[in-house]
Length: 117
Image (cartoon, rainbow, N blue to C red):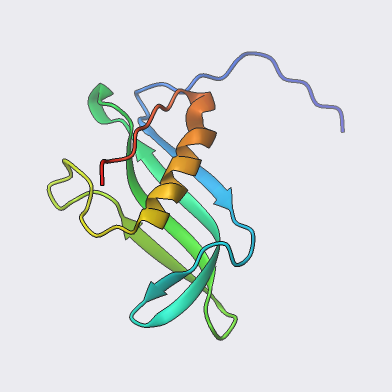
């Protein structure tokens, strides 16, 4: 197949959402939910910049393996109920995942500072 392309794509604020995918080395992160441990192998972090506001991480979707070896999906909301700040109680390890995704997203103009502990 011969492929050619021209132009330079630019992400614009009219579509103020960017999803960043991360793949994890097995066993480097463990999520526990209701006493059951899950090993994530993939995360998709949703960033948004509505109405020209600074970029904010909204949600992380994890794909993980459960103790039975089956894959499950786990979603973590990062914003509080008023959507004006971080949700209390989000573990530090999840904010580290968001920071890794933000570093990867820097190429599309996202600048992100994690919330203060």
